[in-house]
Length: 129
Image (tube, rainbow, N blue to C red; front, side, top):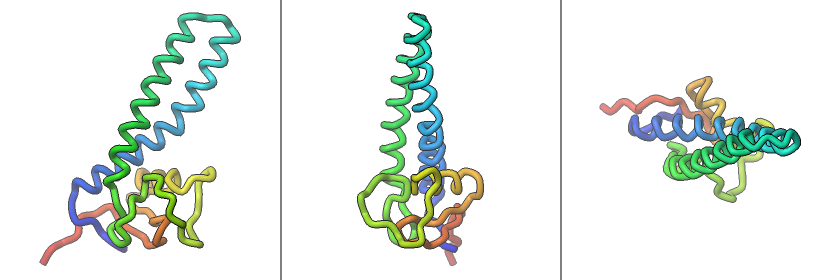
């Protein structure tokens, strides 16, 4: 397994992974809450849904900034950013998303497979001799 050069890269990966998972939870919640509040004609709930929508936009912006600098230690491609590069033929998805699968693996397993080079990486700092 490949390891990272610095702890800051691991922190960026974990933070971006958390924000991707948070985004995947917030977007459906905001849409559902907004539809429900409009159908119930509840103005207060509509304001809450709009505020949550603003928070979701901020989460997306922070995730985009963090994910662009968190790279695979082998191929140096941003693992959690949308690049438009072709993925490895054996790369797998979670709910249709390569980034979501990598994010869930980072958060729950402490390691992940890069969707671009398909090499496993563990979230540890490389020892220097």
